[in-house]
Image (cartoon, rainbow, N blue to C red):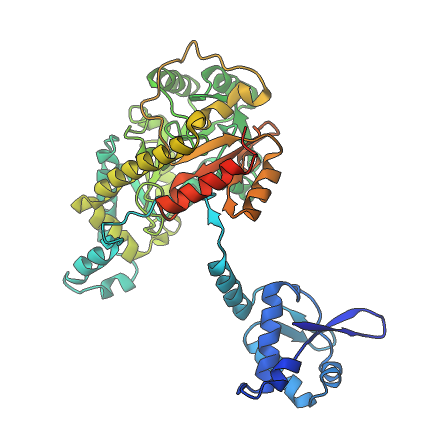
Length: 493
């Protein structure tokens, strides 16, 4: 709690309210620490803003009617805890990053009751006892090896990196993308893999082609690197071939980044004809296709660029199919850009944590990675059935919210009316009857967090819809509660 202390200029100045603390006979904490605690709490709550100037120590001591030495001691302790910083002649200011304030914020976050369905992440895979001991088993197995776990405290050796490449090649081969280890690079995340790939083939202000709705990580990279994204018109199956060909000719773009199977975020999935048409354009126009095959690993279908490896690279990781905590990603293909990337080991293999990389390798070798992917697919199916029960008329992925229909027109499906191989995905979309951003804000006040379409939009064209991640809920019970809240909100068309 704070009292408002006014200076002669009539500006409000912070001061802690210590009356209750002073009156509490059971309090054993020194007074100066009580001041520090009050300061940390007010920073965490926002009563003390980042960069705000604190009152002079003498003025604060007079206001609190305590010794100046007590306030001085409190300020020194607060500075040690990185709550504040003082400069001679300028005063004392609240720091932007406070260790103590962060602890308070984490505590508050843990106490929140909001069900977060905004993040696309794998579902928790629990056994009948409500446990997932795969990590414990892996660490136990690694600890039994010669040298135990201590070898993973060092930088990874060249031989270990070579073993990881073999594991990465096996992982992709098991998913239907046959590739040799010499054409694989290993790094920690798909986001890092995408960043170093784009850095190797794009200059500032170059145009990169993506879907009209793309994942936030792609938008963040574009902003960071100064490249320009061009959203290619998409429909219920993903990229429209004619639109892609036109975009290449009109923009001069040399790079396309897309995920044709379970496109992130729309979940649109190309059928065989669409895949053939898109690959023909890539081959004819000789552009580099970066296939982001992360959610695609859950599709049960191989990357579409397996037979055009000289004009493409595939990026895959454990993040969506197995576990985001096991940081392991693969860049593969036979495009010349991989040779360029391979010369920058500090950007690839050096980014790896040896321990998590060893766990990933073990899981690939012993079949755990494959088993967890299958279990994740089964869990997605179960959660999709729950969604269908609550929203029986809304059983669709976002393919109804992409392409021309975004602009209020009707899809033309005559050329591509083949049913998708697997329409189920871990996220779904719901069209709303008002501004999607406002709907997302209102739903959060009701205890459910979702994402409005604008977050994914490359241009100003996007649907009035929200994305819901079914696997983000901690349990089926939590998911049902959240979906019922959304349904009863009155915002869904």
